[in-house]
Length: 522
Image (cartoon, rainbow, N blue to C red; front, side):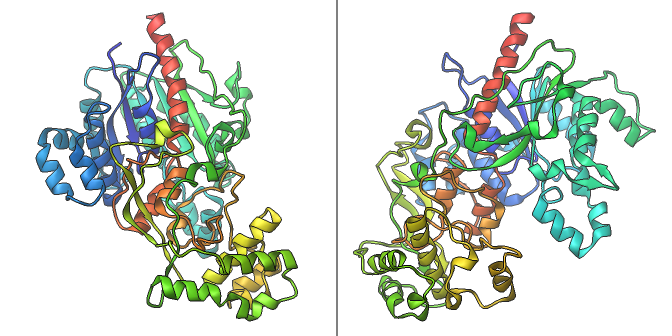
C-alpha cells in the first residue's frame, strides 16, 4: 500500500476532522494520513483551510518564521504566500471552494477532483459531515414553526446523498460521517431519516439507482458495514441508533459535545475496527484555559476604558438588585469582594498576546514554542446590564456550584423582554445566562457563540466576560497555531461548527489500525 493514505474531506468546515487525521502519528513518528482534498462552500472557511494546508506543507519543526509573523499580525497573507509560492500553490490544489449538492457543482467535476487527488491510490478515507441545521433539534423546531412545508423540502436533509455519489464512484475503503444527535429523531415525510441513511450507506449503489433510475450501472458495486466507534458489535445490525453517539467528555475532551459519528468499512475488506477508549476521568474546562492571559470585558454602546469598566463594577453595591432578598448573604459577600477586588492590571486583550507559559492541558498538543503567545484572545464588548448579569451569574456559580437559572436572578436584574418572563416560569431558555463551570467539561460550543456570549460566561467573576475565540478553540482542542480567518463573529462560527480535533485524532488512530490490518492481509 502506498503511503501516506489519502483523505478526502467533504463539507469540511474549518477542518477539525481533517486536523485529527493530518496530525496523527504512528508508533514510528510517521504521519500515515494526508488530507489531499478538502471541499468547503464558505469563502472565509475556505481561507482557514487554505492557511492550514499551507502550514502542513512543511515538515514538523520546519514551519517558517513568516507563518508565525502572519499569526502575530506583522505581515499579510499575500506577502506570506509570495515568499513560499510552491507551498502556497500546493495548498491551493488541496482545497476546493464548492457547494456540494448545488446546481453549480456537478458530479462529473466532483469525480474529476477526487480522482486527481487520489492519484493511484486504491484505498483511502472519506470524512466529513453534511450541514446539520435541518437535523438539529433547535434548528428543526424553528424551521417547522416558520414553514412546515419548506422544512420537508429543505435540501440539507438529503445532502448525505453527496456521500453516496462519491462512495459509488470511488469506493473508499473507510468513511467517517459526522452529524448532530438530532438526526436520530429527524423525520421526512414520516420516515426516520437516520434509518434511511444507514440503509443507503450500507448499499449506496442501490440507493443511487433508486434515486435516479436512468443512471448507468457502475463498473463496481460497493457495500459497507456501518460500525459504532464506542460500542463493539459482532453484528452491526444489532446496534441501536444511540450506540452511534459519541460523548466527547468521555474521551478526554474538555467539552460535553455529543455527536453521531458513523464508521463505514467496505464489505470486501475482512477487518473489524476497535473502538474509542474512555478516559479515566473527565477533563475540566478550566484545565484547557486557565493559563491564558487574564482579561476584562470590553464595553459596548459606550466608550470603552478600564476606568469606565471598573466604575460599572464598583457601582454594583448601589444597584437595586444587589439588595434583593433573593440574594443570600454568602453570595452578596462574594459580589462585594469581586467589585472591590484589585484587578487594576486587566485589559481586554488583543489579536496577538505574548504568552510564553505552556498550557496546563496537553502542552505538547496545544503549545507551539515558535508562536510565542496566543492569537484571537480578545474579549467581546458587553452592555452594562449584561455585565451585571455576568457578574451575578459567575459569582452564583462560585457559591452554589451550578450555573443559575433565570428564576435565580433578582427580578430587577432580568432582561426586559418577553422571553425573560417565560424563562423565569420555566417555559423556555431558563438558562439564558450560562456560566461554564471550572470543575466540569464545558457545555457544547455551538455556532450560536457567534451571536452572543450569554451561554458561555467565563467562570472567573473578576473577568466578567464571555469566552474569547481562543478559549473556545481550546475547548474544541484546536492547537494554538491553528488560525481562523475572518472577522471575530465568523471565527466563533467556524469553531462552533467543528469536530474537536483531539477527538478526531483518536478516530484517526482507529482508522489507522484498520489500514494496518489491511496491509498485513495483502
